[in-house]
Picture (cartoon, rainbow, N blue to C red):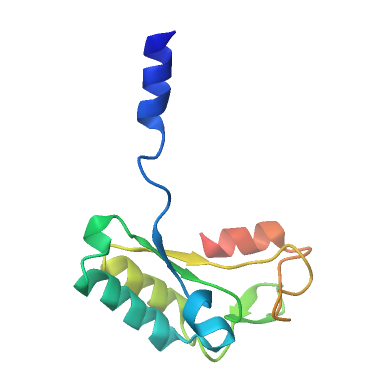
Length: 123
């Protein structure tokens, strides 16, 4: 029983997920440039090396859906793939906000009826 408990505790996270979330500072005003600057600051300050690896874009990145129902980013985020590549090149992980309803908390396009489609596009 003790060996099993030790094995389980060894597989649990040593720390909680650690990172940065855009909402805390920018709320509805976050842009691509803000996210890139946050990623740069996390590396320069040494946060990444201490385990802060998540860069999370909160609400207000969402645009409309295309003809196939795919969620698009709005003009504040002109190329989400390029932004993700930039964050990843810093040794960080990019997270993105979504909401299960038809609209996000800030009134932007959400995932209702498109949950799997959106999850596939985020991955």
